[in-house]
Image 1: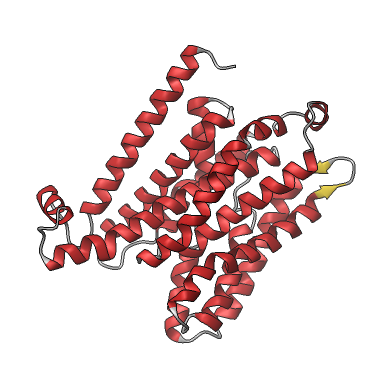
Image 2: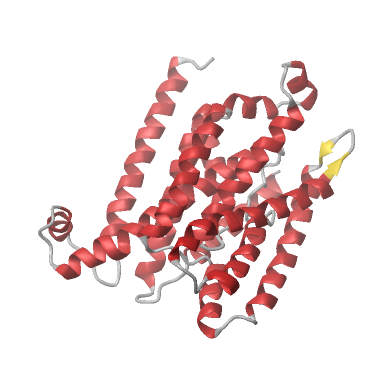
Amino acid sequence: MINSDQLTRVRITLIASFVLLVSAFVISVASGYVSLSPAQLWRTIIGQGTPKEHLILFGFRLPRIFVTILAGMGLAVSGAILQSVTRNPLSDPGILGINAGAGLMVVFYVMFFSGESSIYLYALPLFAMLGGIAAAAFIYLMAFEKGEGVDPVRLVLIGVGLSAALCGAILTLSTRLEREQYDFFANWIAGRIWGDDWVFVLALLPWLLVLLPIVYVKSRVLNTLNLNEQVSVGLGVHVERERLILIFISVALASVSVSVSGGIAFVGLMAPHIARSLVGPRHQNVLPVAAILGAILLLAADTIGRVVLDPSGIPAGVIVTIIGAPYFMYLMVKK
């Protein structure tokens, strides 16, 4: 049970996080190579802007911003699931190699389908998910010890090693790409938000609309899996079945997110930790706060990258890594 003081704290945190996300959204919409004043934004939203302002807002910025928000939510919730299921505070889909597995399939997509009809873009998240699932299955099997379950330390070490191996395979395959395709994939590896069209929003949105509610429904199971495995079994939880289901959902969320946003790590590591420090360990509270914080982190990183170095910008993945790498090392020392 949650007492009234905790409930008030959760509500305040949710409201403050949402206000911060809206503020980041407005700043991101107005910022860029061509700035839009509040008056220009309002005029364009109500249909009275110039063709140039309409193109900038609805053709370029809004699709990219929505992709960034959705991808940040997916990565944050994915990280929250992994940290609870594996009982490892260092778990993150980027660190464990899941993103790299998804990226390998994105390379195959670029090699064979990039010149086809845009209908294939809707299948891109599925391609990425297959690669993420394969990587996660390998990591899980290698880290699993009979009678003891998944060893957290081995999980991280195998994940880091697999991530490096897959990145090497990605770079090797990318040398076979044409110049334009290679430039695209260099940006993908760096974590540049490349899904800047409404088709990418439509490709990503259905996955999150289906998977995020399922995760929230299973928040009680996540609470139980945080306990000792014997305690979870005693409470009537089918541990292995629920663990596999949740890992599948986590991998799916991370894979479909990076398929349209680029290879971005550390969002899934930082957002859940910050959320737990604000609202406590209950996943009914952690999941929505982590999702909003993940969206804020990635949106802020992308906005900073676009503004600092116009017009090419700095990839959002680089900005997040600058923040996330020291945070990861801090957690390594602490935990």
